[in-house]
Length: 633
Image (cartoon, rainbow, N blue to C red; front, side, top):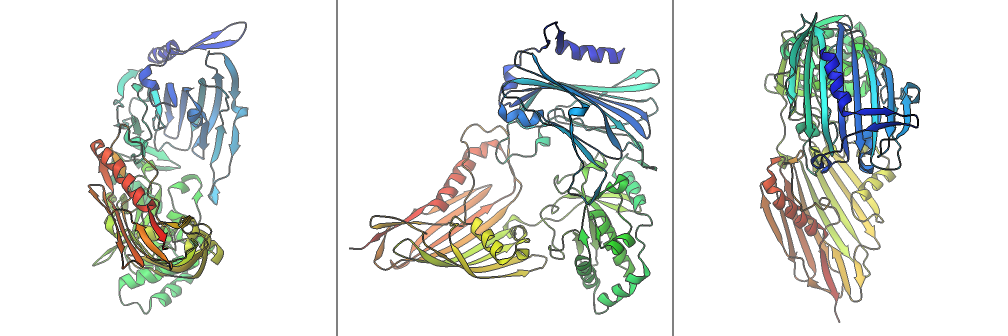
């Protein structure tokens, strides 16, 4: 009876009239409040999961979506990726115009498929349908079934409002389980905790959410998941690819993950003398770890492997040694095994490179997407990124610094947080000496120092050939036609890495000439940010990346020219950042520009938005300002 009521509710809202002329749908009008800031509207999203056994289940879902304008088109595309554990077994769809008339129907055979991934080995297969309708609004209906097999480690995540600028009318979730099962739920946003009812031998858990307004995708906004309703659910005890585990908390989940590592750290005899040789002159454990880390970088490479439980279980260390490659799991486990051979303890660690926080009171496998290695030493703790040999030993890169992680120990999982660096250390300094010519041309000598996160942006630079290095530099400055020469660079690969770069730039047109005047750009190396709207701000400001830029630029005036006008100095300080721009007249023949920008990461209340807009307006103006020189009579 409960299932019957569930379907009646849906059909009441979405009616199909099958006439002799043409199938037609009748949808109620969308409320004005749900049209505000919306490119598309989820009219109905219904997700049902039926648990069949500990290794099989059926995910049934239906989506009715109205696309209001061209910007909402992408949200109407269907995409699903299957793998060893999940198979798309049913699909149909239909598209209706603004009057409810049928445009076309789709079936499983209309889906395009792709088995291409950026992974070396993967069992995934992607199905997709691209919506192409010329006029708006239109409504698209999808209905699909997914068969779960070989284990259920989590139930489908329910996120009915999955795009910015998308509102939601109605959505419902239903989970059907045997009465003996005890699922774990976690809700976010306006999502309500599911209510439980009995249906014979099954327990039915249901929840609904409705009338959610669109979240506008504003600049400097936190992730969408911070605003929309979400329901996570997992089985407390689970079976997955012939293994059994407990998802009650991170400790028990970690015990299962630790079990996947058992026996995978065995090394072949042939590597033992190699490890002894590379570590024989090391005086400390830290030196030994670095020697092994350098050996790993020289003798192996990263590839992604997602086969079966291999998405969670590493390749055996002996296989990585034999093949010379592995994914983040395999390389980290291989590093673990080599350190173990030298008597150095380390800990296999899972982490997310996108979302910095784990849900501390809710364990689930899909909260992590990467593996690193923790090496606790007597006076220091190292966090080793084993997939990127370009990164310096001991440096914690931007994608994991400050993130929560799960240490996988024989006592179970243990949540920790990686260290992060102060924003002030992510700095870039420019020292530029410019010789201006009376025809607008000239030359400059540039010295650039980039540190920590700003260094990271340049790690691939060293592997480029000379011409591509020059192209890389030109793309970063507002002077694309300049000729670069005398390029030198050096890397300081340490815990606090630095890239130093020096080059000469000759150009035909740096200044624009109008009559007897030259208009000289103050700073061609910085661009600020795109102009921000001064309208109402709906959500707090979120700055994920703090940094510091410091520029000292000296202009040597051409013969016969004098300074007619200098831009005014700027000095702004706000909680989210500060900016200073000072121009000094050095005896009429030289101008020195000093500009310093500091951006502070964090979240800031909407009350700061007006000041934030004004701040960036001043920064943009400070960088784009012109010095005016006049030819003397």
